Image (tube, rainbow, N blue to C red; front, side, top):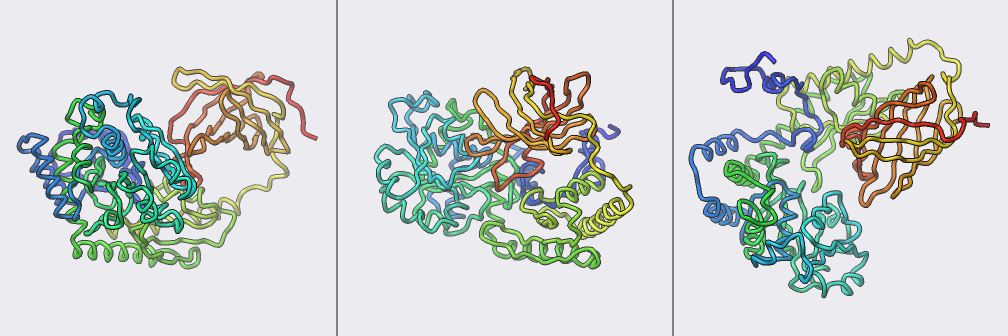
Length: 507
């Protein structure tokens, strides 16, 4: 670490991460939080710096911000939160407890209160667990008829914006018609706010947006806009107050930065400038890709994907998208989207590509990676059959150390050549396991369904003296978002396995 973290000198882009021993990436994956969301606009940084030059009463700041968001969006009021999931939590708290002190200070204990939150089953999403964390009972429904039977006991209806736009049967308007004045909260975190707000104008009570994705505000912010009484109650249930949401702290600098970002996003001239820049970057990449290797096309932006993207296709089916993505990151620190890709297709999102130089580097790196991988395949020695020294068919005891919490699972394996499949079981789950053996080494992936996501254990180990020892990489993902980064997002665990039966060669 040669650079001082507090240095004010001029440095190359990313120096602060180098000083921490972390290599920065070129982000072609869009606004995913896993890769840093988005960088705030210069005007946002300036506003945050100005906010840090003085102090303010936070409730008075909330009043000013609430009025300003109302002017920008046409909503009655607005709140800046510590991310969009915090906005969902505070909206739920407001719908359960309002701003009644006894109910507020009891959360997440909500017995005796109307605490049912209804959600269309097709709208369930990984982060809706925060609704239960507030103290609500989250109850899915499948039809408008089911909704009618449940609505009397509900304090809130939750809709996922992306799912609602794709659902012609359970629409926001149809739900509003059946639920009367019960609050409808729409999570539109990755979608675009407008004036008038598209969801409020259709009957929503509160709407949630991310402040740190397309708006290019502070990455850790969210926006909750809509009904003034409920938005005020959400603020009361959150920081800096002694209430359930105290842990969801958002600073004065972030609040001001998020409002400035919202104002900029709603400025038509800036939106048009951004769109032109994104298209220019994609054309730069396309023009620098080798036509002998790739076929490209620009996919236009949509209501759910707010940037155009470059579809990059190669004919050589021996090389998968996952391999290209991994090699681009390893060799060039370029992060491509690791879902929404195909067998021999990757997408390039221009939102966080910083300039033409980065765009040209992305293209040159793709050219290099594909050529190198083709050469490696063509020059690889001929292999006669799989390298299989051991046979792992049978029942195994699998012991995983989850940061001090040790669990014993059972895996039953069937091996055909180098290929392994079977079942993987714990006390409260049962799923499948697949993988392969190379010599004495194993690579296995176990997965099982857990509420809205599949849980993944990605095992790597080596057999020594009758015991497999190695590591389990842990994660979870929805089918839509299945990717290496999500399937290994929860870190690593030590893993061992011992045979409960003598391993047998498969017939």
